[in-house]
Image 1 (cartoon, rainbow, N blue to C red):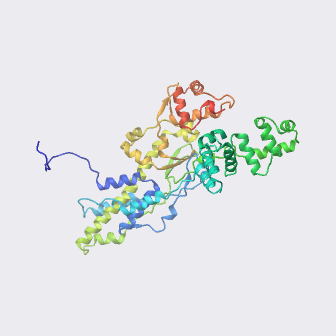
Image 2: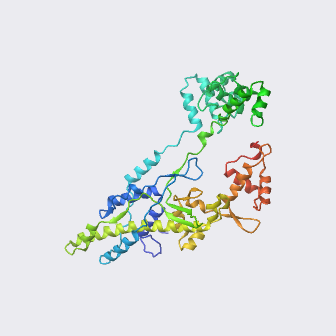
Image 3: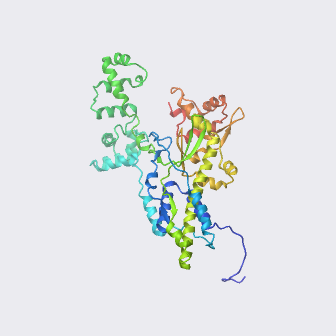
Length: 482
């Protein structure tokens, strides 16, 4: 066979997205913060696009906590006026009929400089330090000797997420090659670090360290109760503990209040996820008449329109042909921007309406009533492609009576119940979590016992499914919940 470089012709079919479609998809997929940047860029690059005065910052919604975080939900009023892009777009269509374009320009691709700035911004977002990093920083500043520092590094490496030391002195000595006496000295240093109670070898030591740091020595009433009656603290009254510990009832009561303020797992504050604040774009609420209402909320986007001055120039016969062609292109491009925003809002609203209709019981009773819902099913009802629904719900948030959720939260697969109905996997996970939350702490339920309990309630789950959901919820097995 002869080898070399050749040219040949061939025909093939391929689908290309028109610039208008690419822009619409880009606007649809963009979360609200990114969308604001896109609109601002369009305003800067297109001279015929103008912002309606007094309608930008006034429309910026206050971010709200995502459901499941510690903060309370913000109480906001919604006085968003109906989107009038549709009327303006119709008027522009009539005006531009006399100035057809072979191909309208789409949204320009981001420049390398813009991409570099965006990446720099993302790289600048820092996460809070981990527990280990927090402890290592204090170790480096402690000024202890090399041998103690080496032992301290191994101690910190064996601190679990609760903040407790998961290895004994002998193990640390063996792993680090440092004598046990030096390890004990290093441990005493680490146990003085923040957070108080860190590197304790159990609950009792953790609480005693915190009491000592608070000025409550070994002879204090609180230290005596922790040291000699820890297991009875949650079961006996102040009078009973006072009698057992040989102290006055008032002393025991005051000591119990102080102990209740201590943190039994000081490391968890470093592993707990921070509160996430988002800006919902849509609200689903119940009226006094028990009707479900869907409303689009303020989004903080500039309200756009085409400059009347440039429209007049386009329609003026005295305007040069080249200028009229330029204006027609820019006006058409501005129309595409407004049309994309209009379509984005319309699509999100239609999907939210389908969610509201399907999840009415969830809004009234919570996650246990969350019904199975698929994107393909909603797409079929709305006459959209499934990927369009996926783009529309990703990164978009809805305010509901149960809190603020990402729209895609409501799309979940289902499981069959004993009565022939169905329940969402999210609701099934909630059922597993509730079963564990209400178990006897002295006799935790095994995965098989949880499955049997839920089966008795009409929810058929296999043991392995319970185990899978429990692990996804971050809950330990029965033998570790004692």
